Length: 326
Image (cartoon, rainbow, N blue to C red; front, side, top):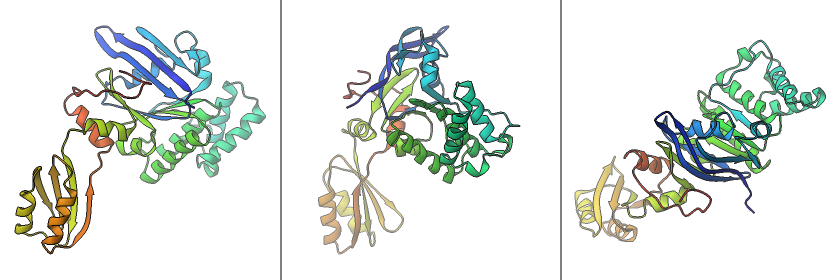
């Protein structure tokens, strides 16, 4: 059963004559990994600051872990861990000392703090570097140290702002896997703000697309793709043994064909207004050409993102998910 843990109702933030966030309604459930996507200035950071109680909304309400972020910001901070994009530590202290210091600030007894800090540093892959000064840590190591830092107080929600920025590919995969473990095995809710679409698609249960202070659409990636591209052309990829002019002419004569693109010596990319895979396969085989593979391209987060933002966010979509905007 779904349990709401973050609830934003008619949330707006006005800075002078600039509307940073406009009438945002969104619910995020416990244990969910939710991705916030959008260009710079879209309103993501302002929304996060209002969730944390670090800035007050002009209108609307924010409830996190059952507390109102505006009226009860300290209670919210006890329940939420926040990892900003530019994280800072005491460079002259070791990784372990930094984490224990955070634990003590959160009134965790020293013995428990020491045990928990050592366990977390092991979980994030810093066990061997725990006695190394933080000033000597690489960017990727600092990000992992930051994750341990936000987890030391056992938060119910963690908010990560561009957590993989500047990390090598192997480190990125390790961090993403850790985020998934936190969500699925420890039931921690993760709010992830990122520009890295492929990474978001790998781990997020749902995503929200921001532009000009407005949440244009949200939902599962496959649901957004299905609705956004329901009336668009279908792209079919066919890998064959060889491509000849007679074969191309026959394919182009099919009904519903928009265009045919030849890539290399063996790949055909066919765009049509309907699913013509069976007719396409029949033509290729009857021509005497070997058919090695035939598939309809699935639209991913990259397609969804660019479909919205290439027009300045003017596309509209009817959200079927009752937990968010309408």
